[in-house]
Image 1 (tube, rainbow, N blue to C red):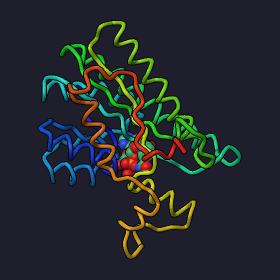
Image 2 (image 1 turned 90 degrees about the horizontal axis):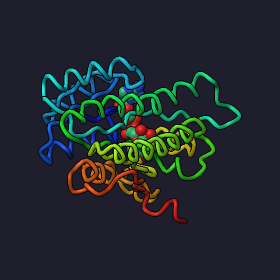
Image 3 (image 1 turned 120 degrees about the horizontal axis):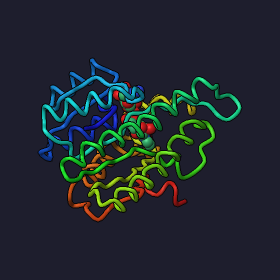
Length: 243
Ligand SMILES: NC(=O)c1ccc[n+]([C@@H]2O[C@H](COP(=O)([O-])OP(=O)(O)OC[C@H]3O[C@@H](n4cnc5c(N)ncnc54)[C@H](O)[C@@H]3O)[C@@H](O)[C@H]2O)c1
């Protein structure tokens, strides 16, 4: 199951996992795109707002009834409003935390309950390099992604100590070519990547990765090939945070 899968990174994860032979459930608040994309490559779409706690128990019931088990969850849904410490309002702060932190918490809790019934599973939580370095214009987003990073480690160690055979890892992309980053480039740099004569060349010049760069990592972490990888943070930024 992948949340926020109607667009960007979640969509790329869904496509790749279907190609790898997984039965994929995509969820999103965006019904039109979610349904259309899922139909294109043979996934199942279910409408969900990840910050709605009740939606999680409903979804787990549907998954159990339709598929019998849940092997993997990617907590990917997110928003990234641009606001720094001086101009962020409380409503936006709470909204960001509710989607990223509440959503990931609800998702992990619900998935672990079901995964325990089928003897194990793998959870991937979408964090960001914003959890590792300071990013001025993304105050709430950075706080949420930092929370996801440490929540992931606490879940991983709990599952290991209780022999649940459930792994939990976080993924930390830098800038990746999705609508979220297009909006950021436009707002912060006045650069409309999609309006460029050669968007691919512009992407390369700006050092922006592709959604598949993240999807391959997600597919690996979900798979049994990553059976010894737990509680770790996978950075996908072509060295941005090393410099
Ligand atoms: N693109 C990047 O460079 C980048 C870098 C680091 C981390 N991320 C993270 O990756 C994830 C995906 O981002 P993206 O770039 O693909 O963005 P995107 O805007 O293309 O996709 C986000 C999706 O989440 C959905 N969504 C928003 N609120 C939701 C909610 N309450 N419930 C369910 N779905 C909801 C949106 O409808 C959208 O389909 C986010 O968590 C983002 O923070 C992205």
